[in-house]
Image 1: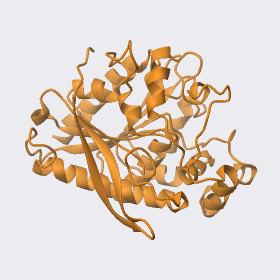
Image 2 (image 1 turned 45 degrees about the vertical axis):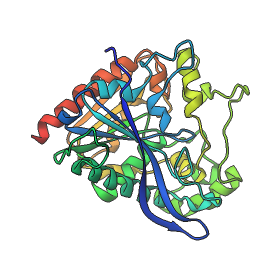
Image 3 (image 1 turned 30 degrees about the vertical axis):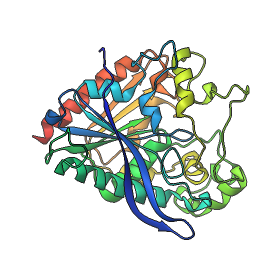
Image 4 (image 1 turned 180 degrees about the vertical axis):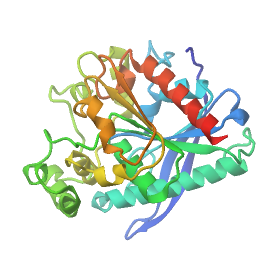
Length: 332
């Protein structure tokens, strides 16, 4: 589907969290509106993965390909009638960045995302987002997360039950055993969580590390793309690349990371996984979501971890839009 650049509204959202020696924390967010926003039924609330800020959901290649919107999740999904929003995790993008980044635990991030989601929905429900948009009192949210952002989406939903459905991209509860430090590989996931902050400090040493490609190119292609990623997409990804948050990143490596919470989710779940992803065998991923009676698995051929960089992204956008439409009809 051809898409036009959607209207974008950038906002700062209050988290209600105050940290010692820093003060109040805020979340930076962007909202993209569809051509007829007054008719929108669902908000896609997006959380990026590790090493990424919210621009991951609005990838724009540099010139001469800067008019190519095919990599932009925001442009593609808003063109299909959804309001799309993406949040910067605390410490990244335009969100608050305390000097002591070790205070940004997984629990703090989830609390902040819950508060930011609540405020954003309140603004949309009451017509306070922008003068161009009327009140949308019946708008509901679908949580969308990629990689570590999907893990945080699972935790947010388990704690607050804010979303009517979840779309989890490039994620499984197997963790990343190939990257996990030895003390986490065979640990009981529940007990191991208490070890995460100390392990993260030893593993990353600094609160906001920048992860570079093994070849020094800076595009992280081997981590987020693979050699089959499109060049324009890899170039676009550079603007979304940020520092890493060590504590949630370490949790995401833990085998069985959020398996307990995932098993208790009872909303419809869409799983988008690349055939060359980092999640293990794609067909085994749905088994973690035993509490949901409505699970959709979409395996993207010849696709690595950052799905939007690959030709199969067109398939993902179409399938996800059709699934979102079914969620909208089910809510009626």
